[in-house]
Amino acid sequence: MASVRLAYFIDHLKVSGPQRHLVQVLRQIDRTRFSPQIWTLRGEGELISEIEHLGIPVRSVGLGKRLLDLKSLPVLLRVVRSLKQDRVHIVHCYLSVANVVGTLAANLAQVPFQI
Image (cartoon, rainbow, N blue to C red; front, side, top):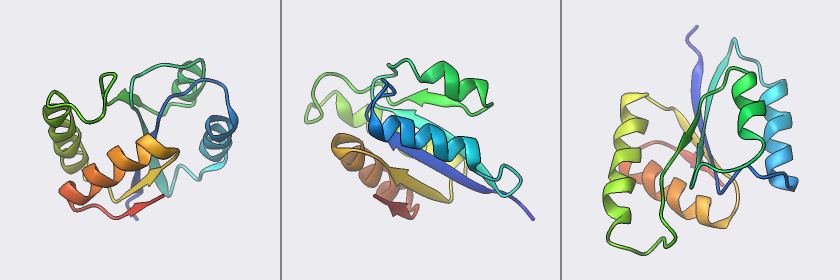
């Protein structure tokens, strides 16, 4: 059976409650059934190395300071392409801005999502 490809979107990976929860989920997830990847909005935080140490890729959306900026459109389209290329099955979002970016990218890529 092929593994379910998951993309988790989160604002950042600095040490905080939701970020710690995500790390715990990633530690416990059955890697024979699920293949997770992490998307952060700006690629920052102390927990990045901890997640990468688990063998899970961490990618940065590369979003600038403002979500509603014309420069954000090509960034969003790059994420949509990546979700399609990686054939992601489910997008799961944590925190408010990542919810917006993740659900928008998932909708455009026609991938189911959970917030």
